[in-house]
Image (tube, rainbow, N blue to C red; front, side):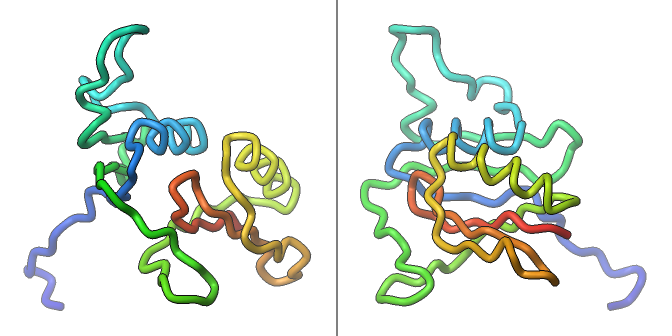
Length: 142
């Protein structure tokens, strides 16, 4: 690539869900992100118009955003085998095996479902989970 050639910037990863607010809340708590202004949950008893279509979470450090798009049907991936490929997954990292265990317990408390435990791998300890909508994601030591 020539030094003067411009390239697009990755702005966000978008995940489909049949319950956008639920999935956004899972990742907001897991990743410590904040809603884009206007996407916050409504006050108790108020309709959640934004939560029926499209929501965006922003990284407080200005990194890549995560967005959520409402769909009527979403076949859950059958990773690691089966008829429904994962097509995309998120990789999340922690600095140590100790922190991996802390985040493993947090992920489970927040509603993740463990798909694979490779936490005893000496080269790359990791866990693979499904989020509440079934999207696979990994947390590993890097």
